[in-house]
Length: 179
Image (cartoon, rainbow, N blue to C red):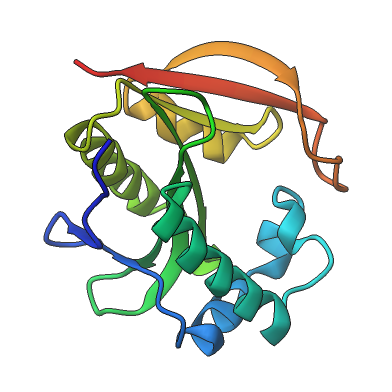
């Protein structure tokens, strides 16, 4: 597979590769939504400070270079960073997994559907044959995104992450194959 573009946009939503100097930005956006994110994301379950933000940005730089993952900041039309997303090469040859999170202040507006649509198009452009999304079965809002975009439910399985206070311990897996 090719390396994805560092910036993706539909003219409204823009995704840009995270930069090492965005420690304060990622910390602020995650911290502002910690109660919204922590039930679903293990990395947010115990709080999120400057050290976690720095570690995340260091990891994204390394992962991008190695081709293991491609993480992006999600920007609103005014340029404000409102969440994060990425494509991970961890589901086997020809596949990319998509993950995402959004500030509580920007949910319910179609932002994540547009974001995932951009990621899916880029995944197929760079050579993926299939894209998968997984989420805890209780996270209904997260599951609405792949459903809206025509993904197919393929299985429910035990999560490989330890359960947090809001999770069921089971993941729903969705798949979309190259048209």
